[in-house]
Length: 113
Image (tube, rainbow, N blue to C red; front, side, top):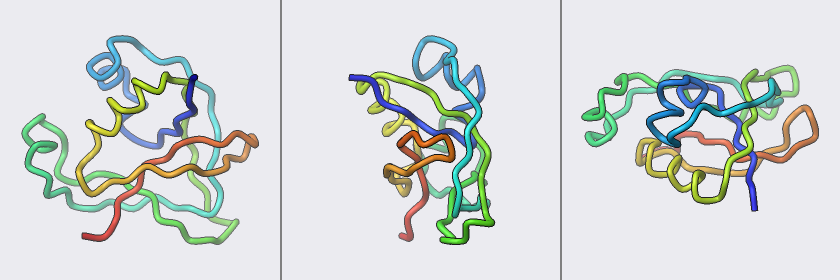
């Protein structure tokens, strides 16, 4: 069964997609209402050792419909979704959210440590 993944950051980059999935993903533009993007400092040593930037984007649920984040929605396999789990910093979690298109997709956001 395939899953939908909403990307607002590095997973949109072809280089990251090829390294993670072994292929370039095809996606469509979508929007996530009630959230905004903020930068946070990453302290996950394994993530940083891969050469990733120390400051990364994350989503914040504002519950304000005037706030929105534009990104891409990708259809990936369940196995590829687990690759994403391993790719993201340890303090990121995956949750489902409804997008502007009406599709439900997985999103990643940082949790407080």
